[in-house]
Length: 330
Image (cartoon, rainbow, N blue to C red; front, top):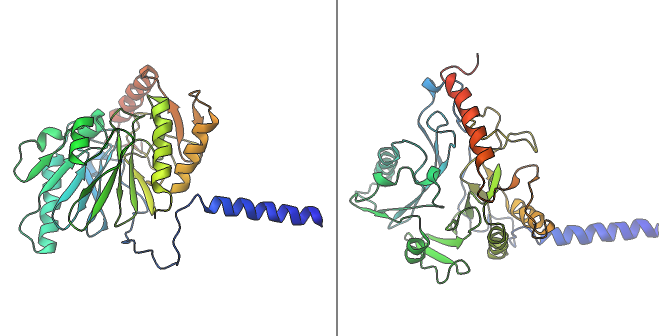
């Protein structure tokens, strides 16, 4: 009986401790967070590319939009975020490969203006980081009227978002009654940043955390960045973590090979703060020694700037799928 009592006390202690890991609110009343909805599934890249739109736009709510590039356009299938405040809108990333994101986003902005009965809305174009699958459409926004373009550099981000010191300082941007915090998170790429939307509680985690392969090029920086985000989110409401890709299948511990354009049974886009804590714990267990470790929803994947294995897989997989992109069911 005594051992059972001890076990119960230990279990309660563990549960109490774990409860501290999650964002908390005093009452189950929504905590003042503006709600939104995520789709049950996303269009990927098939099975027949003729029927797949180049872009899919999803209305999380009337001022927050998630855009996904089709795998038929580029296998990375990145997610782009478009957020409206009272005075300005913010777009994060410009897609991969040859695309027409400039035209498409202007269409979305035009529809938003019609809905809001407004004439114009200044647009800020920024980035999660500088990898090619996030900046490919940059030229379509440079020099465009009513568009402020922020290059994907440490200097430009620090200035645009008032980041006091890189990478330890936290910046922000006010879109008009809508403040987003900007957290430097190098490790995947040297000037990677995350955005936290106070209005919705959404943490836009870029390529540092998403359902897939978390490519780490600077391990100490990645560890420090993860700790920084854990500390930043402590006590804050985190409704979802939304990254820039889905590479994981709906089967735990199983991902799609790099270069996959059609993912019929992929993982949901959204993760939670518990995944952030799981990543942080996993990194600490490695004790400073980079190693590939698979978890149910993501994989820590150090590359140490050696992309040869991934480049080979990408060419083989994407080549095979492009050969039958018009009908992948046969």
